[in-house]
Length: 125
Image: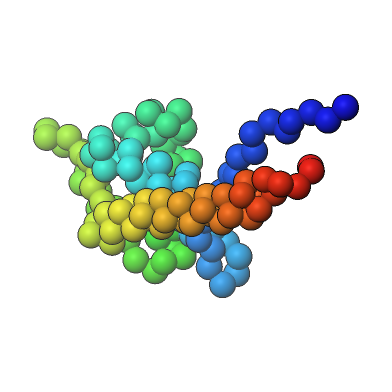
């Protein structure tokens, strides 16, 4: 008795590593920088992401060190309060990584459709 296989779905994950294999940027760093961009604060970003300030700042610093350039500028507190904003590089990294992620997923979905959905349509799994 043959049963029809459940619908297959491809999952992809994209990240960028340096020459040593250390993570430079991926979906987690994207969420962090996006939250800083949205809230104007590392502390508020950490709160939204349910992470400690130290963990968020550590990930940002590690990426900055691996790129050799700052991604965030910080304003210290005072009467007007502090805050953080993305540098032009930080903003470009967020935008371009989103584009890379979208384009990679679309290409992978098309390949999956060709190889596994259409390509196996008349085959028995």
